[in-house]
Length: 453
Image (cartoon, rainbow, N blue to C red; front, side):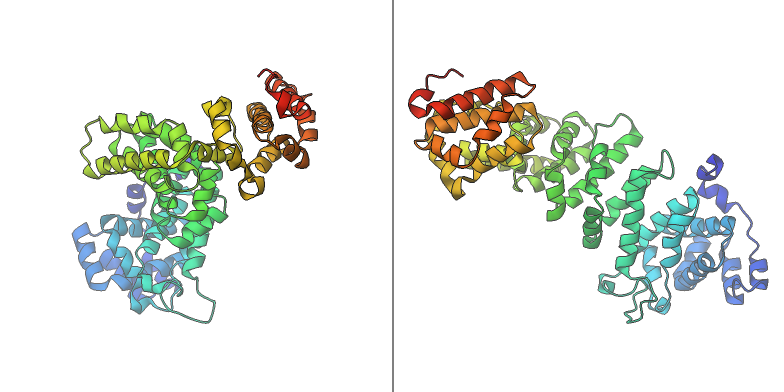
């Protein structure tokens, strides 16, 4: 698309003179529509406000009819600019689209179509307007057609159609923006409004949208990127209320990124929304243990020492801190170990080489038919990370040494061949620990203690 077309402003568009009379002559607008447009077009804002107060739904009908029946780009842009101007001045005017007098009209279809067919100005305005109209609908209309009328005929666009269509376009923008600098910020801005909708959360997760947000969670350098970061974190916060989205967040690098952002940000609104997100995630799955491992308790202490004006933020910091303390108390050393194994990412945290840990917790490995031991053995097949493989081999060797029937159990679970394969691994740390495991497996517990780590 030509750059000048992409960079055109609302003010520039509204300076145009549109030949409304010509459109009436060709029957593209009615005589009543022409009268309404003459009264409204090019008038001062206070005059337009009075007209909308008196006859708002009639103007909505005229504007949407033009978008449905007239395809000339300059006119489409002009009407979108009028609607955008109207909603920007008073967002609550979105309710006008849901007036009972408009029941029976498919008010959303033109905007959905223009999302995909117009230039950037048209796409951006259509997205913004659609988001505001959807958010302004009476909730009693859910399950009805987009205009509020419940109908068995599927000729009208339903609310779900609108929301799914929007999500599809927003995800497309995040993958391949129509505008190099404004595509992604526009998509995120709309998502920050729309993700309050359960249908949008569901559609967004199904469209694999969560992973598209993660790269945008990164410390910001300038005002523009701070706003983008804030709205991205706002999206993640809204998703933190939705279980399927939490599962996606758990398997991504979202948590380390959120903590990096909160460590480096001085913008209060960014810190607040990240802390609220972390508070929501604290008791979900393995997030609590990961927060402790990533050093969040110290980060929270540092944040509490700063002078924040927002009392809600201070309260959230206190709640997060208390939640993490409770989490640390509740998590026995074996719980922490179990979470690390279930995540499939092992590292040389102190418990692996702690002899007391192995002595005190060895019978816990028997829980749920040796579930954790089975996962540990599976990791030998599935992981490609050398550190994880090395630690898994070492832990197996510790189990063999410390459990009375360790050697028999590990043999029965067919771990021997998997460990033997790793003795030829290219990484020296892996081969060393695979050898240790095999030695202990063959020697048995009686002699295994002589094998040096």
